[in-house]
Image (cartoon, rainbow, N blue to C red):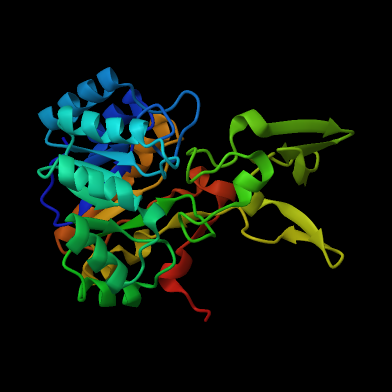
Length: 332
């Protein structure tokens, strides 16, 4: 069952109805998801929810003590906000527990049209200062801010003491090397913006080409990586490309690796974090169930005053590597 005694919410990904059920059954307090259109930042074929599926998902979660948050976190096209407004209206009508928004105009629309709807600020808004978060709270009644993955634990603690809203942080899954909501790499290569169209490195622009004993991955006609015989061919995103510079072949932006903060969850709680968020709406239900179950055990152990158990999650991390990211930043 989803209900727990922990003071920290476990917010988990649901890219499909099956993943929603898997997350709730594995112990998620909340699931976050999106409609099947460009209003959410994971707008990929085969993912996301129709209105009917959302209604069924809300019923499934609520019957088991869970909650559902809908991400409407892309930026509306200038002069054509209709589908974004409809997404907010439908989420409210279907009884979701919160909507996750990034755009100023959409925050204003939701606050005016649905004053009883709980509003969360998406990481896509890139609000990383007390002044920015207070503005969203005072202007639109934002109740929670999902923090960008660029802050240290001590910086998060400082924010918590200075803002009147709950703080949510990512604790596992993919990393973004850009300030969230400010990435133009994908739109440069493909014409599709992750912040407006909801598609970072869309599959329609991906190509794998065999050249002898090598495999070349391309995005929008740009070569992103070359893999040798027997080397797993990763998905081509520009920020994880392997390029030659100054005579050296290397990952210039970010090496394939995943965020994993299991070892510092107690410090996060002490810093005032209210919700732990797991990334992965593009992942299957087996991945979701495995990660949610592991973090459920860890969070419950902390709530009992115990040390979280060791969890072997290397097999499902990107590149088989893990990092605590900027939370334990040692550079300046």
